[in-house]
Image 1 (cartoon, helix red, strand yellow):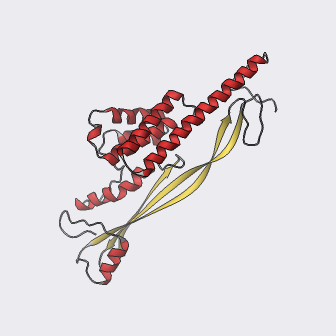
Image 2 (cartoon, rainbow, N blue to C red):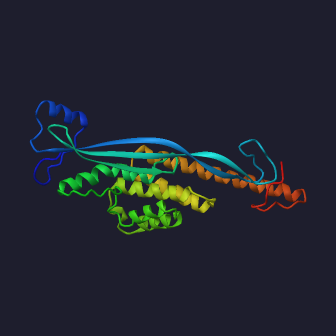
Image 3 (spheres, rainbow, N blue to C red):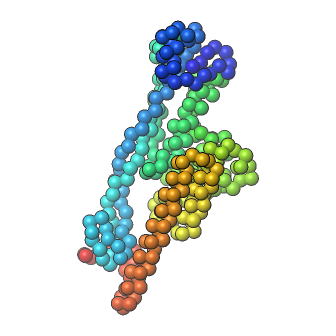
Length: 267
């Protein structure tokens, strides 16, 4: 709810505004910025390689590495931002913001975008600006935007390095707890997920950053993220042990373990 003059922005719910409008308690000349957020879930095709000595999605087990088709979930977050006359409800201007997240169960960087909409727009209105710059919440942390852009462009290694430099900087502890928790959690996921295998040292670092995020913030989402990364690391250890066992079985049988990229010749 925007009144005339600087620093006159009030955050209210839609129902509160409608009640005030019906009771003629809305200041003359005020405008309302109504923000409606929606979340849709979809699936994209993905391929995973089945390790040696294990079974694929169809129960085929054997000596060769196989590729299995899976469906990976993604989220599309949409924000409809409408500028309305506060007294009549008439539409003045409307903008749609959209963010897609491919990180699966955790919304990752899209969470920054959606949770930052209200703050960024509110600040813009408070400064009487017409152009709204919607960015990441916690963007006052130097380097966050660069890390996010690297991740969007598919350069995950650069994104991880950038986030790690942020959390290692001397002034990082001066930022708000929630901001630090978000950056730490995103760094943990950046290290834990993505194409290719992660060695145990990398997964251990991911687990450490996720634990720090859970310690910094009491929000349950960070504790759940830490628990998930712990399971990811345990699964990776189990897969490596199974591969080592398969390699020993090959050696005991006097055979050589086929190379990773060897074509499948049958079951």
